[in-house]
Image (cartoon, rainbow, N blue to C red; front, side, top):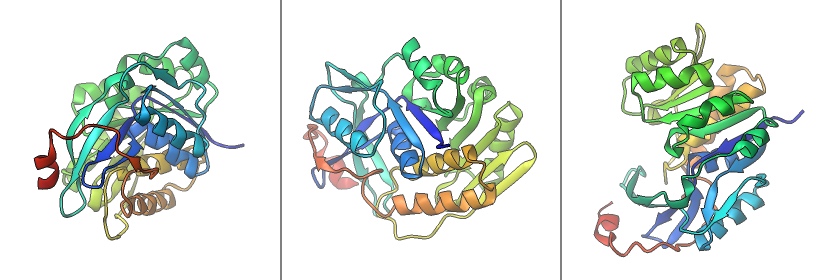
Length: 282
């Protein structure tokens, strides 16, 4: 039986002024596409505007085979983020507007989620108040991103099948302690990604670790989302965790070799004229 993953929450168009390109993105949108590429049946629940950016997102999701039964197309502007880059490929977020992407799920969305093996939601989606409802009908994957307050993790970890945290700025011992605290708070699995230092995965008393896969980095945007998506699909399939981690590291590295998290470039449809100096500086 095919593994089924639903992502609920944020989307943006990631805009690159230097090349006048935009790419569909955002943690939840990325996970829906990447999990599909890793062989899962996926769906995406979110909201886009009635504009060129929203059309670009809808076209990309449809071409990837992501189910869009619950996608809203609303009056207003599709969320966007203006991206700059340093010489090492690390991205810099210069400006953003979440606009219509900040939506409120309804009961039909929750009922739709019940048909999936897992529901992925990221903290940037602003949906924390709705997590218990989704966790009540499916396994919850939650991406804390760089948010690490202990109180916040203690409130959400008990709902999580997979809790993911970004910790590229922490030492290995600090990352390990963060993982242990999150598991102790109630998460079944906890993934801590550390950028070029690799990643840690834990469940109960079991610990797994992988180094980053070496590549020539073009753009780091989406690497963490790739790691999360591959880990989630692998855990749902009950793959060997050690091998799963190595596969996730390879997949995340491959993402770093291209511009944009999932591809699907189109001409930038966002006005970035007020930040040209910042864009050039990065």
